[in-house]
Length: 168
Image (cartoon, rainbow, N blue to C red; front, side):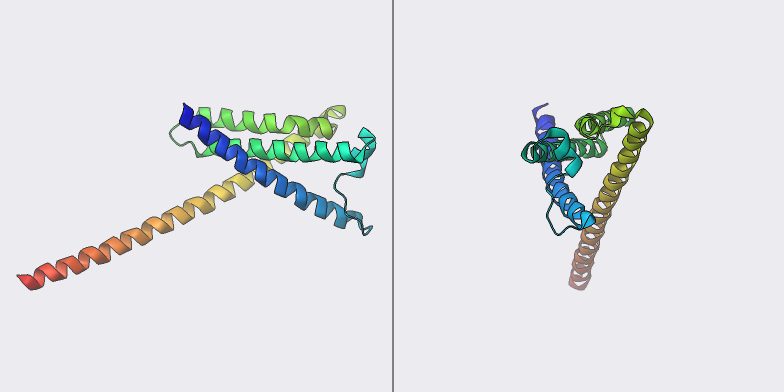
């Protein structure tokens, strides 16, 4: 059980780091989108909601890191091949939903239920696609390593056969 907790913590920390990177990219894209020549650490509407740019920035950073951490946990659940499919799906959806709760509150999703539900589903699908692509590339890399090792072993065995055939 301790090993499981350690793995979950590892994946959540990796996700948290990815969340902080995504926050930085989001801030850069926001600044480019607003095109005022200034760098925006936070959405102007969020700063207006909280009446403090510093507090709004801290909340936005927390939301991105929180969501990134839970995306890391969701990735962990998708990687647990020794678990049943149902257990993986429940853990995956639960972790992503838990990660989106602060995002929903900060983004005022509950004021417009249809938009909030659509946003939730859209983000859930986007994150699922991103995690699928990451898993696919990781799997492809692992398969290539295995193929390389098999070819290396075949060459080694072939050389040993030639040496044994000559000695007879």
